[in-house]
Image (cartoon, rainbow, N blue to C red; front, side, top):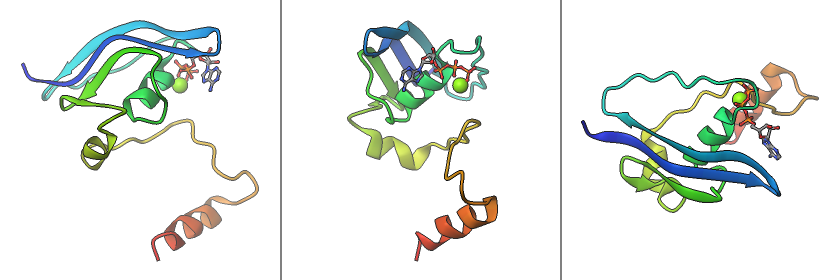
Length: 106
Ligand SMILES: Nc1ncnc2c1ncn2[C@@H]1O[C@H](COP(=O)(O)OP(=O)(O)OP(=O)(O)O)[C@@H](O)[C@H]1O
Ligand SMILES: [Mg+2]
């Protein structure tokens, strides 16, 4: 099966705090995967590394065979991400934030 996501020995440290310790898994073409774990296990950190938002400390991670950090411009047009833990501007209402984001397009 062709792999869409390949993660090998992925590591992420925040200072001396090691959050990801040798995370290794693959997701094949057409596979539907649930990524579960305890609070603080490192799920969001893994996803942020995959999206090129955080730079890994070690190991490798590819999507469509492209490096998630170096080749993020090739990957991003082909992926979607719906975050559950998003922090925008706490002083704005939901409607104001939508209005602001729409204005960015003009
Ligand atoms: N920017 C950061 N700086 C320092 N530590 C961080 C940072 N982001 C996350 N952490 C720590 O890394 C660990 C993993 O966090 P992460 O958010 O990836 O876990 P999670 O599996 O998504 O948890 P949850 O189920 O609560 O969403 C936690 O101990 C968290 O406090
Ligand atoms: Mg999380």
